[in-house]
Amino acid sequence: MPRVDDSSIDEVRRTADLLELVRGQVQLARRGGRWWGRCPFHDERTPSFCLIPPENRTYYCYGCGATGDAFTWMQEREGAGSFMEAVEALADRFGVELRYQASSPQEEARRREGERIRELMERACAFYAAMLWKADEAAVAREYLLGRGFPEELLRTFRVGWAPGGGTALSGRAIQEGFSREQLAQAGLARVRGGTAQDFFQSRITFPISDARGRVQGFGARTLDPNERAKYVNSPEGDRFRKRELLFGLDLARQPAAKAGFAVVSEGYTDVLGLHMAGIPGAVACMGTALTTAQLRLLARVVPEVRLCFDADRAGEEAARRTIEAARDVPVRLAVVGLPPGSDPGELAGQASGREVLAAAVDSADPLLPWLVDRRIARAGDAPADQDRALSDLGDLLEAFPESPDKDEAIRRVTALGVSPVLFDRFMRRAQGGGGARRRSAPDSGPEVATEEGPSLDEARERRLLALAIAMPTAGRPMLQGMREDHLASPAHRQARALVIEGTEGWPDELKALEAGLRAEAADGGTEEELKDAYLRVEKRALERKMAVARTAGDDQEFLRLQAMVKRVESVLRAGA
Ligand SMILES: [Zn+2]
Image 1 (cartoon, rainbow, N blue to C red):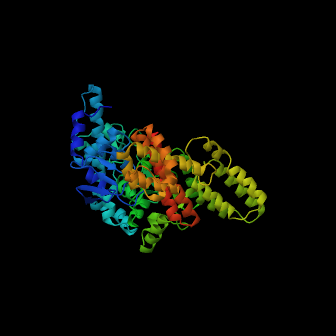
Image 2 (cartoon, rainbow, N blue to C red; image 1 turned 90 degrees about the vertical axis):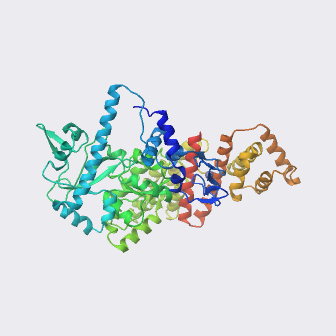
Image 3 (cartoon, protein in one colour; image 1 turned 90 degrees about the horizontal axis):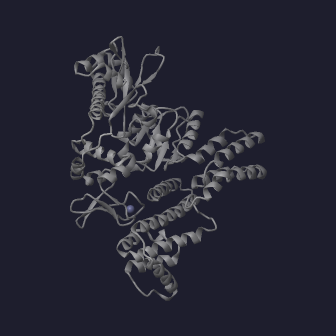
């Protein structure tokens, strides 16, 4: 791959406006010559996240120590998968023309060819979009789309189009504009037979499928002719178009999803349009029956939580179950949007009342594992044999999962059923076997709620944080200041926190022993990385304690919100490890 010239990277660095980027996701207010906001990397009540003046090219959080520039922001908050992707995305956004380092003629030719095909894709997209609104033959498509209640403005935003019939409407035009038949074939826009190019899409509504940066990679196309065999046709799979690694609508969904803290995944193109109409712009479509690991990774770069909005039938349940498998190593939590049976988002959006139903369903999404338990239970009959089978299935399902608050909740829902003690015992042995035991051997994973080593482990973590804050007061004090008092479980540690913030030496009698211990530990020193790590571990425990409270109180929304935050902290911890 040709490398971007260093001078270009410098130009991007100078031109990229971090303030504008951050404002897309965080509400900022000017105070004391700086822009401040609530940190998007940790949970806080009062803003300790700011841009460093005068250039505003660096962000810094006095609470959790998160810091970086426009490039890291793109990677951590806007879905760029690497530094180079961040450079290219920023160049796009702020209009910097990138220069590439001198490379071999073959490499250079390949790069030019790639650019040419990208251009062809964009032109095809614009051509189809224009056809939808002005071609006579597209009247049927306009009627269909507007008749389903999709507003013209929204259809234009998504660049929905019409591929004309006849066979050469697009190809003929592209060739006139200087593109070759081979390029058309490579882009998946035409088939070349006997030296002539025939349009790949004909008489169909087109939905452009773009990458995270909005570059068109291919199309999905729907026929309105009931006699056509395939209702939907996609661009041919190839280097450019890999359906399993793309999400329809991701480019438009990224920012609003990051702001909301979750993305909604539906099955089809019109579902995404429907979700937009219901006031949920952080929506994408997986264009199939289940999310792939690659798709989940794209989403995990942007949001900590993914809400599945699949059909409410048995197939939807299967898809949800397969998504759990695909998400095994992806730092994202899954929830399910419960739709009324037989409905889909695209359809619901056609009426104001349907849009309300949709918005409410997305709002009250259920964590996936407990949801699956409910569904399985609902399908079982009252006969003991049915129940036995359901419990056995659920045991199988839960066995595969490490301990987590979602799993606790799932088990709680089974417990609430009131099945016979013998059956239940068998279920519990299974559900708590495998996964839990495997996971327990890994350090620092799973919630430690109510385990025996819990309190002492909490205390050890809090001590570590306090000691490091004493060792590095410049970084440590603002960190302690930014945290909530209830981050610390131990009352003695809460008092100690205040004393460390004030820089008091010679603590009250009842804290003398603690002070001596902390100062001895502080004398060994530490690094800012360790400090940040210690902070995050304490924060994670604080969130988990709050989750337990929310669960007891039956506050599902709060429970979900906190759990998403735990996931995020965990992924930051993993990234730092
Ligand atoms: Zn922070």
